[in-house]
Structures are given as C-alpha cells and as structure tokens.
Length: 107
Image (cartoon, rainbow, N blue to C red; front, top):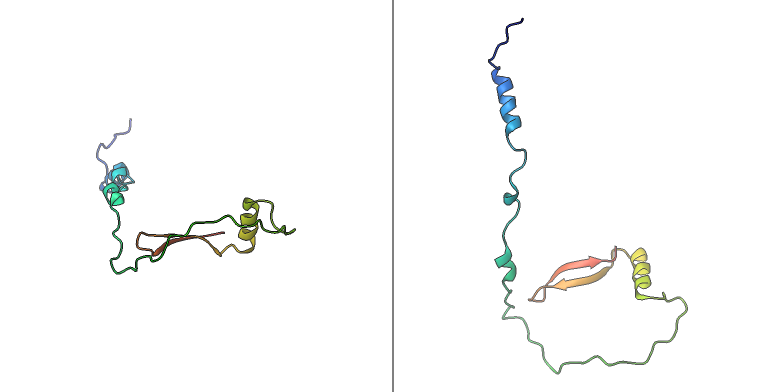
C-alpha cells in the first residue's frame, strides 16, 4: 500500500482545534442574576409635590345616549382605533417617582 504520514500539517491541526472549541459561550454568561435588584423599591423623590385635598370616588352617572356608529364592544372599539390611529398612545406606565417609563401604542 501507500505509506500514510501520521503527522498532520499545522494548518489542518489549527483548523481542527478551532472546530473543537465551543461556538457559543456557556448559558450562565447570558443570564444575570438581578433578582435582588428587582426586589428593591425605588424611593420617591423627596422634592416631588405631595397630593393635596380629599380623595375622589368614582360615581355612576347617567347612561350615555345610543350612537349608531359606536362599536358593539370595547374590543371592537380598540381594534377600530388601532387600525385608524396605530401610533396613538394607548397606555403609559409610570415608575414610583411618577416619570413615564413605557408607552404602549395601539399599533
């Protein structure tokens, strides 16, 4: 037969070593344990104005008059508004200091 050289060229050995290395870092490097940070409560700004006056309660008023072009349900109304005004703000979340942190749009 043909003599087989048991030595591998350095370039092929380098390629084999490269392929043997893991392609992705271990999962623990992707996750940060921020559980304690999540439990921390932000303290309100001491310079923020305090609410004044009496607490207001919601009262049930008179029923609205029937309008023929109103959607039949809240879900239908949201869908209609979302298709006509997709970039309009739908909901804004505030942090404990009263600053807006997230704004959800209809779209």
